[in-house]
Image (tube, rainbow, N blue to C red; front, side):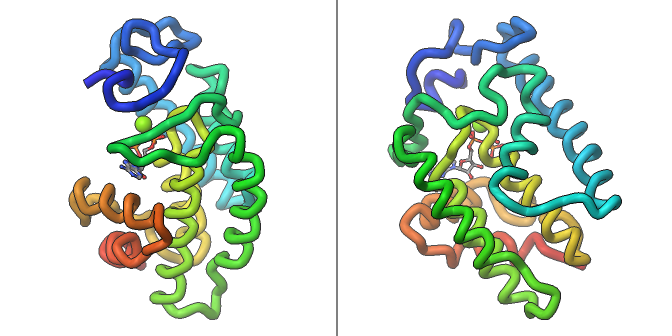
Length: 198
Ligand SMILES: Nc1ncnc2c1ncn2[C@@H]1O[C@H](COP(=O)(O)OP(=O)(O)OP(=O)(O)O)[C@@H](O)[C@H]1O
Ligand SMILES: [Mg+2]
């Protein structure tokens, strides 16, 4: 399936494949390149985490996106300028993203896991962070991978393993994201509970 048929967006497609700096025009090759870049980003940011250099704020989410995708896309680390919907669900209007991110910054600081938090409280907080970020969907592409990496860094900093989303089906994960769009975080909590281990 091409990007064009999956996403309702304007402008940047080139024969169904996202326009990119390396002029890759084959979808599979582009996806492979993205996979390599995100895997490099995991190594890079987990290296920084070991040095204790991370501050978990919105700026950092943008840094993750930029570092991960700037080899391929000029819009890496930048707010999208096109409207995006998935499965009939419209994400935040591009004109409202900046405002929504200011709200999200508050949500993020209110829901930072603390070392005294019980596991169920940490799961509640992570579900809110994941779902609220997804509802904004500030980037043109790569929103899911970026917030999952951010949350993985966060949980590892609290002594957990990275979250294993494969413990839930793709269907249940997407359903959890859809529910989260209307602030029902319960299914995302389920997904995180299944995937979170020490
Ligand atoms: N119908 C939907 N409603 C709400 N959220 C959705 C829906 N479908 C997918 N999502 C969310 O959007 C994310 C995909 O967004 P995007 O394509 O920008 O990220 P990605 O990193 O490229 O993809 P993926 O997360 O699939 O690896 C999914 O991870 C999920 O969180
Ligand atoms: Mg995508």
